[in-house]
Amino acid sequence: KPQAVIFDLDGVITDTAHLHFVAWRNVAAEVGIMIDEKFNAELKGISRMASLERILHHGGKDAAFDLSAREALAGRKNALYVDSLSQLTPQSVLPGMTSLLHTLKAQGIKTGLASVSLNAPAILTALGLQSHFDFCADASRLKRSKPDPEIFLAACEGLKVDPARCIGIEDAQAGIEAINASGMLSVGIGVGLKHADLLLDSTEELTWPRLEAFWNQQQR
Ligand code: BG6
Ligand code: MG
Image (cartoon, rainbow, N blue to C red):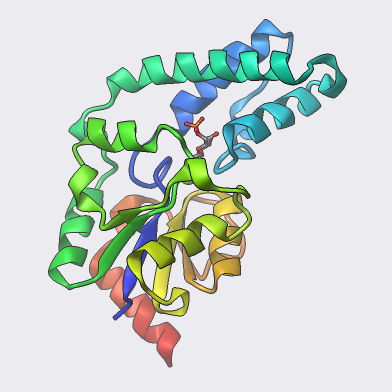
């Protein structure tokens, strides 16, 4: 058995990716930049400021905003995003995830959270999942964003587990790269992800029997 399973939040536990997109689309439009869902996929797992930098670059406006103007834009995006989080309830947990968290606990496998979102604690509370994780990495203490493995290594350290004995779960390409670089086994959720050790279409397929079979197969 693995010692721990470490989860990304946005897009794995709940579908906030769309809420991030709507908030960014509004702020980008204010400064004359159009973004679509396809471009948004590149923002998954990327921190707030780094996302803004990618959007400005996408619109050819890298040089148009100084640091304080960028901070104001990022602040407006976050205010819109935090407003939209009031929609979240325990019903917003993606299919199968609450039951998977319970099963892992019953199996004696630790659970961790590795989200770069500064809103992660508020989201867990809205979903009613605060007590379901043995350790949540603190995004505010990170020096490097995904694809750097720092956040997954911080989660392993907090859980006191060996990355080589753990599974990480992600919906973002940057997140898969981060898991792979940490030495954990990677599980990707969603189509089109590259380099995942196991790729599943949706969280409905993410069950303990599926993870156990994958783990055993990798140990041979
Ligand atoms: C990640 C999301 O989980 O958190 C990104 O995939 C987001 O889209 C990042 O930019 C930072 O979130 P927040 O809530 O701190 O702005
Ligand atoms: Mg994600």
